[in-house]
View 1 (cartoon, rainbow, N blue to C red):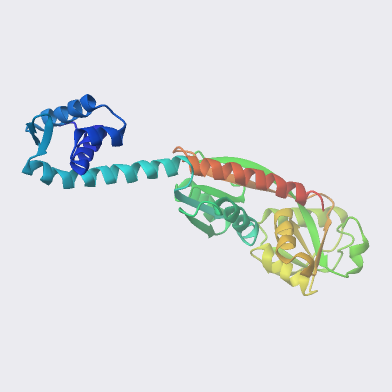
View 2 (view 1 turned 30 degrees about the vertical axis):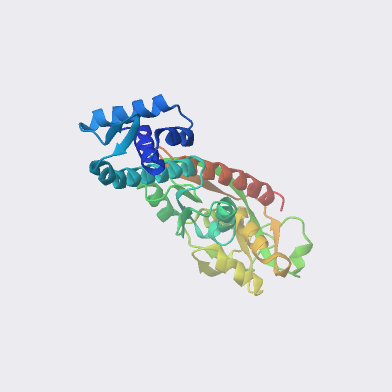
Length: 307
């Protein structure tokens, strides 16, 4: 049995209006076209639904029984069509985003909020974890989009890299605020808040101090730059952090911030990546969000380079 949407639609219209001519008017079709559609439906199901009396169609008991099923099917098809249209218009679906702590405090929530503001039917997951965990989530296809520190190349991940410059964060009002560029000599022996030894920024910072002979006084060891910036705000030290964390801090605190950022030399950089699963196609929704996120990352990078 191969019933068509148009056959069901025609049958319901005839049942509701009680007339072939009225059904034709409601569907903008001719009476012969309506009659032919009903005849085709009856041939398909194998038994008559109407008695023919002087050009009129009189519903049989089987027609009344079938009417309930036909209405249900039409309603389901209509809702399914509407859902497909909403998916195609990026108004329905699910978006799963993961990012590292630096992006989670302000940047990524702002991007997600902007993207979803006029899409109330889209469900979203926004999770913050360390960069290695974000990478594993993308590789295992648990999340659609990831933004974190660039991992080693993996066949299961499609990655686009962005290099962010590192800057020196110092307390507002500190004498070093007058300097346009901060060097290891300026921080000689001063208390520093740094990430764990293996982190790329820590490695580059140590190398910069060793190269100039300045004394590196690591007072605080941390997992992320967010608490490091808070320690700087409290006047307890200085930190060399990535530009993403610096921009996020400024956007979060605005004029209330008690932290000042200055370029640091010799240059230190950190690579961030926009990541997607490589072994499955992306939905139109994820593609659109990724394009928007890419634009926002480039704007963020421009701001980070302006310190």
